[in-house]
Picture 1: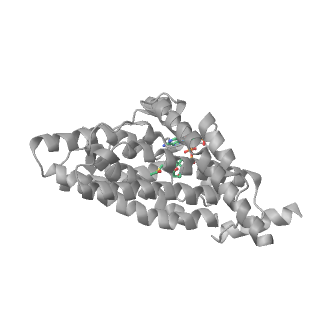
Picture 2: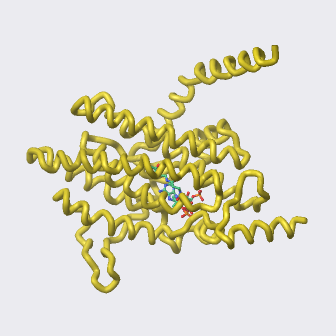
Length: 311
Ligand code: ACO
């Protein structure tokens, strides 16, 4: 009966077990997973653009090949995540249509421009650093396909974070101009990186359910704090300052205290009014249209292979 199904589901969640695609699950659990995993997949794919912008202008062959590998990894992450979301019953075509029409979101962070080479360093260090802090707990998410996809993604994100740190370290040890370039990039990416963790706990409508269902393991504010605590000592090693006059070690709490975030900016970016929203979506749609022939060729090839198998 429906009651038995619900109690089986509740028991699995209570025992910290995994829900698998063929298991019964509440409609709202399914819907929230589709929402979060699709948004995560879209973020990976849109997230290729800001750094893709620098592939032809990387300062050395080594930096270029590292950046190429990194951007390619993001495409791979998008694919694992689309595949995980598809196990919940929404097709990739439908998710892409929703991305293109604004019916599903992608991370606010990818609506900011990459103005100099140092931005690739700031993205790796801060954006991928924030992504790791947010995503390591997702390796224990209650939905099996999502949790398993996150394991490999997190390993690759660690490489991305280190390559960003390495770009900034090289600049920070360079000429005065290079140091200034690194500082400027960090100044621009710091606050948007803190916004990646989502709205404050009191204004996060999805958190209560997602925590109860074992999708989220820590709240938005807890993970934001963890990121700040991890990043401040790294900034000291770089010799770069973080653009927050209120940032200080708080002996009593054992954490760094930091200034207030500008949530009106976050809301503006979510509404589509960030510096690069229009461009990101336009590029994505153009890439999708330009790739139509690849999808058609792959479909024709698969049909031909299937026909051969029948002979
Ligand atoms: N950018 C865009 N939208 C956001 C962001 C953000 N940084 N943070 C929150 N939101 C949206 C939520 O999706 C939700 O909108 P919706 O209900 O229309 O989907 C709304 O703001 C309210 O937020 P919450 O109730 O806190 O939403 P949720 O519980 O889903 O928490 C979070 C948000 C923490 C981002 C969660 O979805 C998550 O952990 N996602 C997986 C990680 C991810 O997507 N990372 C992408 C960037 S990292 C990278 O790609 C390198």
